[in-house]
Amino acid sequence: MPQITPDVFIQIVRFRVADGQAEPLMQAILAHLDDWVRRCDGFVSSNFHLSEDGLHVINYAQWQDKAAFDRFRRHPRQSELQSAIADQAPERAEANSFSLAKSVTA
Image (spheres, rainbow, N blue to C red):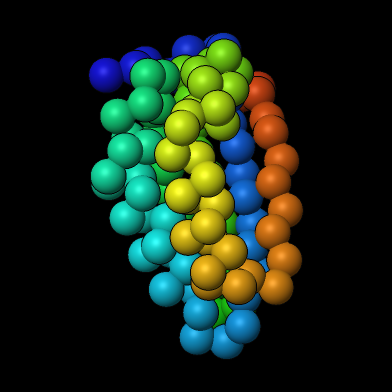
């Protein structure tokens, strides 16, 4: 299992969806995570957050490093994932990349 190091690459994607579409969008993405994404070299984790108003989905994903994320983006099945997302017709999607600056735990 990849370890979280200072080189960890974080991708946060925020989707705006129509009312009632947050869960179906999350499930569409999870199907690909379970099928192939989680086995990509360098994948660490993917965490989903659904807003209380049901209009937003946030996916917080961690990759071992940027190179691992770039390999995932070039994966032959990437178009299938993008089509599954498009089929759910999110109103907006915004992706940002981050590096880990500090981690604090209890």
